[in-house]
Length: 171
Length: 294
Ligand SMILES: Cc1cc2nc3c(=O)[nH]c(=O)nc-3n(C[C@H](O)[C@H](O)[C@H](O)COP(=O)(O)OP(=O)(O)OC[C@H]3O[C@@H](n4cnc5c(N)ncnc54)[C@H](O)[C@@H]3O)c2cc1C
Ligand code: FES
Ligand code: FES
Image (cartoon, rainbow over all chains, first blue to last red; front, top):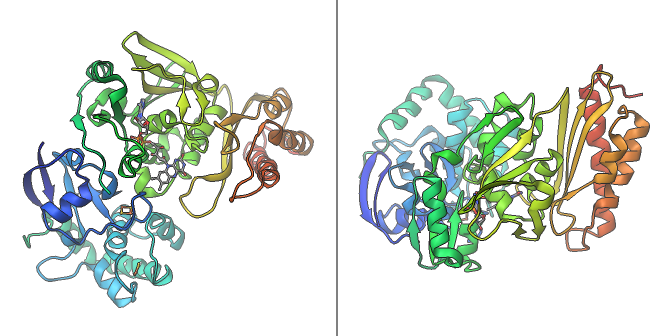
């Protein structure tokens, strides 16, 4: 089936089998391998992307369901070689060990900060409750989101809008 | 893992969806939010030959107030109901329940119609709809009909929908007076199905007496259950320490929990009692001035 999906600001037209899951479409057809797959049960959140601006688990959306819609993946965060403030904050707060869960954590955090620029710790924990980290624990991840929120509240807000307006241009 | 191969249909109207379901009968499954069906297809527990995606049918989305209450479209997502500030006052159980379902990412996709049709005994929506005395509106080739929620759940994963019928909406009656509600749930980990849960919906009259009581029990039987004895013990009486304690003792009498790795049946019964006590106390305090807690 023919689908047209805008991913990180760029329009892709592809012919996919209806059973193709969005996560596999992104990874295997578009080579956007930042989106990870960690489970079969919609539990881990490693595959989190934004679909029309909302965080969803892309292993549990069919690629055909994204037809005519916009997707943002972890590759869409970095702009012209500059890490997004959420990515920088994860680096600075040492919010990862193996990094497998990190793309999903980044996308869920990004979605949270769009809706709620100054979340409480409880709100951060709730927003990330669909994302499982098997190695680093959640303390530094929560700290990173708090740090990103502070960064974004000042001039960082402009950078966020920039990403929203233009998406990634690297491909 | 990948789902099985299937033919994908995306009808734009309800009529077209009903025609497609009739045409493909047992070979077909409908897709709403996909948050239960797609995981089952990935694990090959479900392998439909035709998948009918309801996602493009505008008439199944959103909600509106009617003369009798609220009509919630089958495709209203958990997150929509969680954030529907306009409904917090008159239908407080909706957002209070929605925030307990799965995690925010799943709530951005999953729908109330899909949750009811899936008929999991731990369905939080099923439990809340029992408390709200809701009716399910179903539509099929023969037209549409209303199914009272107590007749909707037949067994685990089995509803009284006829072959070819769809859930198109849920109807929630309007409260006749001041209303307060609580959803209480114990989970093993964040975003999990309930070990046991309880939905409590109370409407009072001008004198502070309970005019309507709705209590749904989650994950303690083959389907979401009604605590009918506790409801009957509350109606017509004020919320006092005594009536609350009596109703709370009665709630587990209508439950039928199983012993399993999540807890013994005695433990789950006691949880229900404690939840009822807490929920009713909080509700009484919230309605204070209209209800007396003495
Ligand atoms: C990790 C995880 C945790 C979860 N935790 C909870 C929880 O705590 N509490 C809870 O209640 N649920 C939980 N769920 C289930 C979730 O709420 C689902 O969204 C819901 O049960 C199914 O709704 P859906 O719209 O995604 O339906 P789908 O998955 O699309 O469909 C489910 C079933 O219903 C049928 N169906 C769908 N819509 C209709 C319709 N309109 N008419 C007739 N049949 C229809 C489908 O054919 C299918 O058989 C969880 C799910 C996941 C993945
Ligand atoms: S891979 Fe999508 S939730 Fe685990
Ligand atoms: S850093 Fe390894 S799973 Fe989270």
